[in-house]
Image 1 (cartoon, rainbow, N blue to C red):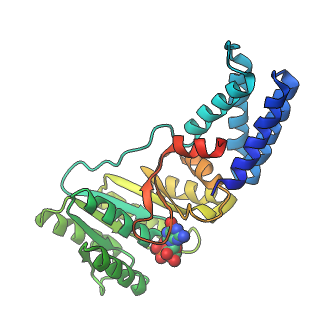
Image 2: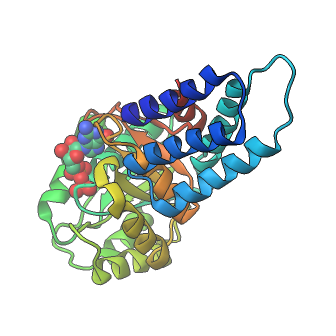
Length: 294
Ligand code: GDP
């Protein structure tokens, strides 16, 4: 991910560097190329416009620093803006309380169930006693998938295969986690292929009932422009405290990272980087920005 975007942004900056100094025209040309690069990477139009506006203001307002060439100065400005647009500091998980509850929401196929297991394994490695549960009452296969993953990573999975009320499953899982001294309860929820009022409402009711520390919205990096609408729908209807971006190992163009952060204002907390359980890491805006700028 980000390869094509990185190439385009770097080429725009190299062209400016060759000029030696940045006059207004050179700056505008460079900004236009960066803008196109971001749009081609599927970053939402409004977010791109705001981004370019901020970079322009800073570049024009920047004092000429002795010994630093103008292109380097522009790289620094674009870098700072990218880090900011991607969320600034790497975000931490709120794990206060016993158990801390983490609710995962998102569309079917986003990688939610895999992510539940990845996050479970990640927290187990930190010495936490983790319980997983699936509140997907529509697809028995999803429950079994989580059970299989739980067995693989050695984390218990609480299931109520006959229960048709997702809220009840979440409540029962919370009771169990409380009474048995678990540190963290991770709740996987049902997904559908498209945004659906009933599904959003169910996720909202689970959230209200179990009052999770974190409600993490899982989204596939390959989602493209549609990611803005999906993220907004989940943020408006259910609410979220952070984002998990999956399939960062794919050849997705990267725009989703900037778009979902931009439209929800919520930080990207983790990234899925492959199909294996260990392909999962905290999201670092500074590292991604460095990668884009080369
Ligand atoms: P859910 O329907 O949202 O629960 O999605 P699943 O967890 O079943 O994942 C859907 C597909 O995406 C599966 O084939 C996963 O192996 C795959 N997947 C999930 N996360 C990643 C990731 O970070 N990288 C890659 N390459 N595949 C992933």
